Image (cartoon, rainbow, N blue to C red):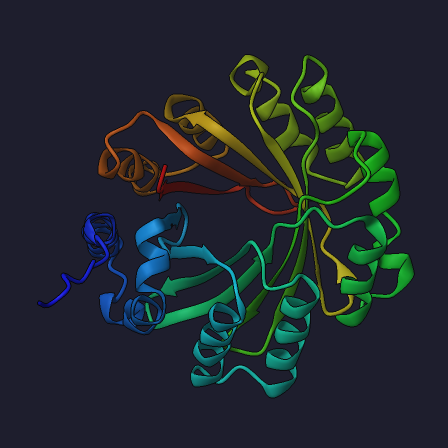
Length: 300
C-alpha cells in the first residue's frame, strides 16, 4: 500500500507571484530577472514574501526570509552566479555563521536592466560591540561609527534591531544599522532627537512633523548607512502601518509627481488595503526626499 505524500501548499507563492508580475509590469521592470531568486527560494517565498517599490525610479524589491546553512548557501550561490566577488561571499558566510544562520532576510532589487542590488539582513538584535565589529570588517573607521552610542542614547536602546549589507552589481557596498525605540507616548520625540543627531534634512523632518498623529503608536526604525568607509549623512525613517493618505501628503509636499504617487497607490491596490506595511523616507540633507513603500505576506 502506497503512502500518500504530503505536498507543500504554494498558494501563497502563486498569489504573491501574481502581485509581483503586476507590479513589474506596471513599473516596466523585467520579469525574467526574478526567476533565479524565485527558483532558489520557492518554499521560503511561500511562507514570507515582501514586495517594495521605489516611487521615484520604479525599481522593485523582492525579499524573503529563512534560516539554516542550506538557506545561506543558496543565497551565496545566487550572489556568486551574479558576479559578486569571492571576498563578499566569504564575508556574508562568516556573518551568517556568527548569527547561527538564524532569522536571515535576503532581497534583490529589480531595475530596468535586471537585478541591480542584493541585500542580506540579520534580525538578531545584536549589541553595539557586534555592530562595531560588523562595520570594522567593512572598513569603517571608529570615527565614522562613533555616532552609534549617542544615537542609541537618544532612542533609549542598547542594541540595534538588525544589521544589513547591500551589494550592487557594480561592486558597491552599503552597510546599514537599524535602530528601533520602544513604542510609547514619547517615541516620536525620541525619533526627532535621533534624526537631528544623525544630520537628517531639517526640511524633511519638518514635513513629517506636520502630522505626528499619523505616526503615533507605530513601530519606527531609524537607519544609518555607511559606504566607502564613511557614514552617509542623514538617515532613513521607516514607519510601520503608514496610511497611504499620510504618505501621499508627505510625497506631495516634496514635489512627487503623478507617476510617483501612482506607484505608491499601486502597492495598496495590489494588496487591497489602504495602509502600507512600511513606508520608508530617505532624509539625507541636500537630497530630494525619496520614498519607498512595502507590503508583505507571511504565514500566520
